[in-house]
Image 1 (cartoon, rainbow, N blue to C red):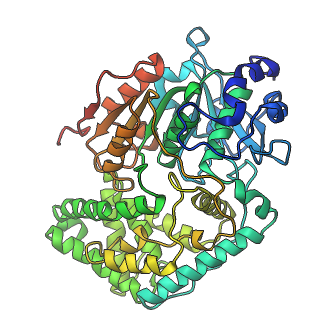
Image 2: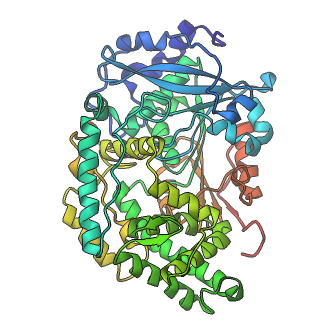
Image 3: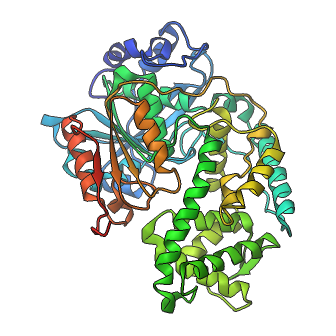
Length: 523
């Protein structure tokens, strides 16, 4: 099928924003951006070939979506050089009379594929969805876009002390950096993995689709990416909604560290909930007793992996599993039953893990090319960004160890995950551009849960101050993500959903910041 506008019209509409790929509000312009759009002509003029979406993209197929490949320059500073492809999907607007352009989404990561994410959100968008062509995409080097593969990660070797586990994590980080550099043509691709380049890809998608503006919803890293786009391309920012952001004054490593204390607070909240149900879970009659059970498990795996249901759980896996469960209050019961499983296994009892725990055990015990692609494409952005939103990792491995041990005094369960070493100290390429400095008045909507222990609420307050045109929607829940929770089978926050959908329908921000009570009215 052809585009709603000709490719040449799309190029003409886009030229003003694509020249030099700078935005009037950008505080950290790249010294390597092209000075004219002439080298981008072959990209701006491309015609997309829309066709069937992949057979396993069931939500897209059910929605009647079409998919295509956008060709983008590998290096926007040298657009005459090699190119990459970006996988995109489109669900056409039903309400053509009130069509508001395109709505692009990103589910987070970095490294998260998003080809079908907008289709996933349709139920939350309600009638607002009818006004947009809903666009999903896999960012560069992720999923069905030109991918980065590093080969299957080797199976972790058992460790029998905290120091031994840390040294194993350093060896693994070094090995991952080596494999990622040496595999295929990654040495050519990796220097161009950055949040800035993903934002440029987003604007290229906008231009090729023939749109003057890009409306957007992003969550987690996808929210930070939306803020990056608004900073770099303020004239093309449409109705921007960003959900669950990090503090833009901190590096990614510092934001991870900030989450450690918040996760311990989440654990305390869960422990209080579980203690009130001591007869059901048998984990303790008081919050202190429940917490002591979890801390005992952490100490147990520090001395060696725990066998459970034919799998093993080491300290790293346990921390990540608990982090996933403690981040969402609806998972209180799942976490309590999973901890009961783990405590029984630690006591030597035969255990059949509950399905939710078994899923995570399989993630950590079964090689998966798809998961390796997500993890390693995520690593590419962590190590490719100059600072915020994804970069900023210390180069000395011993600094991570010191920070872990220091944090253990107040964070006995989550110190290691909050201060974990990534491959970045050993990465073979250096960031080509600085981190993004946010300072603008672009109108946008910002959402954050007050009990978010993945990216703490204080970070949203800090970003709100930087984004002078923003409105902050706060929700009194323990969750990573506020909008559209019903699409994930969680309890919706109707107050937040109404505000977002009204903004997407009308383009009018609420007059003031909004505070949403807990959905059940208990807070």
